[in-house]
Every structure is written in C-alpha cells, then in structure tokens.
Length: 138
Image 1 (tube, rainbow, N blue to C red):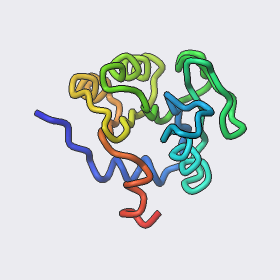
Image 2 (spheres, rainbow, N blue to C red):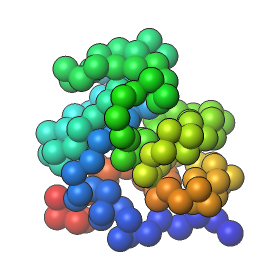
Image 3 (cartoon, rainbow, N blue to C red):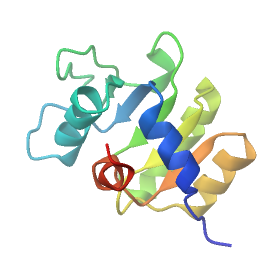
C-alpha cells in the first residue's frame, strides 16, 4: 500500500517547535533546500542543522556531514536527496533516534517510508513545508 501523508502529522511537525536536520543543505543558492530551510527557521521558528557532503555552515548554523555527528536530539530529518539515495538517509534517521522523516517534493521511497514507520517515526513524503504551511494558516 502506498504511503499516505497524515494531515495531523503534517500539522504537528510544522506547528510544534522542533530541531530539523536538513540533509542536502549547502550554501548553493540554486538549491531548494536553502529557501526551505530559511522558511523553517524564520517563518516557522524551527531550529535547523545543515547536513551535506561538505558539512557547510548555512544560515549561521553549524553544518555536519552525517546525522550521527550531530549532538543532541533530532526531531525531523528533512531529506533533500535523490529518491535513489534517500533510503540510506532514512536508515540513518532511524539509527540516531529521530522522531520523524520528511521526504521533500519528488523524493519518494515507499520501502524507506515503511521502515521508518515500522521503527516508530512519523513519515511525510513527496511534499514540502513551504507548500503545506499556507493550508494550515502558517
């Protein structure tokens, strides 16, 4: 059965303050992750932790190369990676005890979503906080 996003989960993740590890966030202004992470930070009041191959610091936030290197809790792992690579990121999110994974618009991996849900994580797939927030009045 295909994953269906739960509107209550989307609402909770976007309205409750949380710490979002944004995987695929670098200083490349052409990448969607830059604008979406700024939205999370400025409009929704979330804490963000950039995660990229280079470990770039972004928006004044310290960057990391792996989820396992991030100290403290991670509430949401926001995935800006290709669908063919997101499964590994979801597995890392499970391993570090993240509370949720958010697979961005166009990022789809039914098996990874199922693994995350079975591990007790909330799962949102194939949508973007910037698209979902207006429907919630945010």
